[in-house]
Image (tube, rainbow, N blue to C red):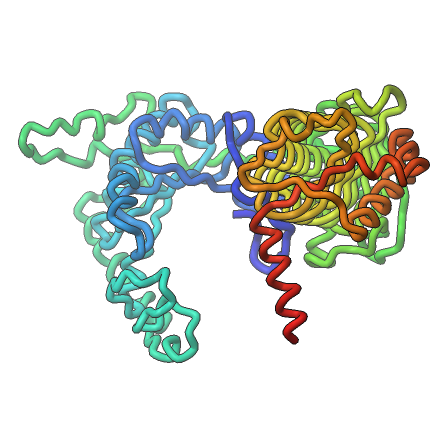
Length: 512
């Protein structure tokens, strides 16, 4: 949950790849910076071992964990998917609650569960097994008129529930009052169960598995499901939530917001110089959130807020950077530079070394949406993965460059690693192939290598001009000074599908 009501925020990176709890902790930290008021939730499928994962999520400072059972899901799900959708929520919920209690982590998070909850008895069972919150979906849809036609993905729902067709939408007969009426019955049944148990509030029910009795059925042993750790007192304190505000208390962005306060209010240009160190993470995320709160997704005019940093930046430097913010770094940066950048400009130019030196870490500009980037030096692996709109110049990249890229432009005036362009379905990359070995380094499954058209040459020259202007790159200057000869060494990486779409658009325009 990245936003709060009434506040427009920049988008998070799509399909974020999580490889470890450390990656998840960094992502949660980044999102907390963008909007400190947001509640960050992590959805986990109910299955064996989910408690261990939930413990890591709690340590990563998530605010809520959703344990999703295998019985819910969209009405259009094929049977093959339903068969592998996880275990009943009761099993995952019980394991998660017990694991968090045993590791003294239960007071860090709220636990929610869903998966065909329908009655007050379901809510009572979930609360007694450790849930604080409860998700209703299918039952709510049915109260609004859904009859489970399982056509949700075909846009032809005859009840007008899951369709964008205006004629079919007119058949929708649902009203908010129906939901209120249904949930009132659920609440009434829950109150009756609580009265039988002698419990006054729902909060008192959380984790009280001692109030559940197992019914013997074909030798099934539910002892581990109903186990109640000794460390949990009868009057549970699982709701005394520890605040995660401390996560973003002493961060550099608060100083940046203070320095640029007048510019945020008036929109007048401002430029500031400031030092940065390796422990300063996600610098720019909270500032971008403030820009979006005031100016929305449109942001500010380019270069309105210009910050010149000097030092070594920690992870996620310039994450989600909003339009109007320009970050120039004299030094080095860690992984995830410009993650989810949304219109801002990032310039990295060390005060020493050549273009072959690594100056930024892995997975830079992951999920970039819009903006510009100029890197005088080499980037690590997975440069511009899932880029969908950023224009970037870099002087070398590691393995898997432009992986899953869907848009934007990337100019590489140096060597690339292996597997360049794997899964690339959009955007264009221009690679300066000095040693004529790029063909062996490029993954040609979804892209082809082409010569340059006049428009391509103009784009490359323009991007190199700006790269030299912002970073003082000697390599960019050499190419521009000898442009007629050096441009012949560039290779255009063009995705098959993107090329087809562009050709179709040209034909549509020519046909009027």
